[in-house]
Image (tube, rainbow, N blue to C red; front, side, top):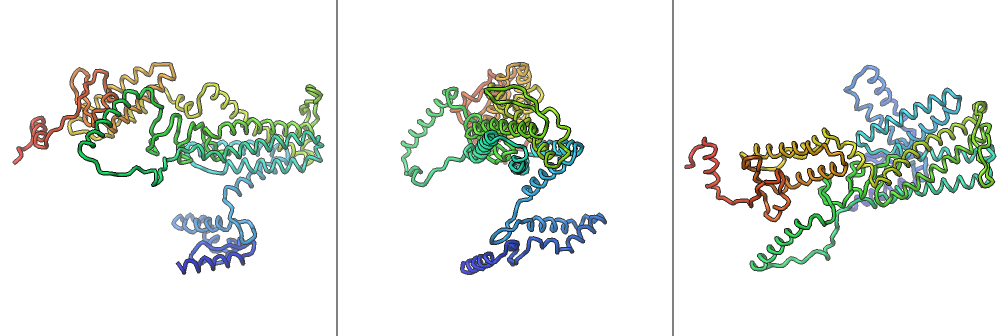
Length: 505
């Protein structure tokens, strides 16, 4: 402990003496490093380029070390030592600046850069959504886009000759939208379904009971289980998360990116790097609405200032104008940059408008993105495959019962396929939920499934109290409580049935 405290004091004293461009190394020897130190590491650079040129893949460790060193030295000067900045922050800032700067050169570069950026963002979004990769590139892309647009617009206000009231309205709408999106991100953790926490004071006391009290408690529990199974239709709808293995409220979906169950999850927003659920959905909608208004106002004011406008209509004494001729915007770089910012704002408006329309349609149908994805997959083939996947042999049964269990599953699959001709979406969802309930019962309760003949199967279950919910394979199934047999009797019956085993000595 004393040695650790001495090391901490030494590191603290060393850090206080660092200049703005220095930092401490990551190894055991906390040496002082400079943010430009990777430029002096010419050996790693030379070996990496030589190995790339000669295609010596066995020396890829040098390339990885060089990239790790570069990432560690990617810092900005700061008081008390250089601060490390994530690579996605630098990448997003550089890409947005390049897109806006190069696109403002002429009309050809504008078309090329906008098309290239749309293709890149579309492919990246498709890739991360299919691969379930959590990344902050899209969130920082949005942040840097808004930052660049705000700075350029503020510097261009004297040039574009905005009215003070127009500028004030634009700032107010932008601030409201930014606040709503920030609140959406900040309240995203309220949607997480946490495990119930119980303190030591809330734990029940453990006392010894007599045999009579134990039998009375078992009888009460038996009655409670029977009543619970009978009144299951009036109980609160809940289900078990297959990933967290805990019971969650209705319409709760597990997010693989956030690693938690989300209350009334709508979707995972890559642009905000959080899930949209019960406690931040309204702020997400308000952010979309005010963001669309702010972007439309920004684009309209800019385009009517750099282009030749014409009057459309006059509402309550306010002239509403639209751009008419924009052929001269690329004659001056400042005007062309403002024009590119306006087009960029229109592209963002189109994306946000599509997202808002989708949200309005879902609210009108009382659904969410997860239910829409399930509905898109609720066709005969996909649901049948999902049903069969749920009912593969995953539970333990006694020897000789595998064929009967497989036959019972086949009968369910055939009936399910026949019922898939239903056109009602709610009926299909109900059947899919029934399949999940059946799978849960099979995995937890079923011990044996024996064929009784004429398509009737006998299910042997673990607990007699759950027999009301265990008519699984056939409506006419015979449900019997499990019969306990001795080891000698069971072995004798198995030998007689197989007719090929030695007599026990």
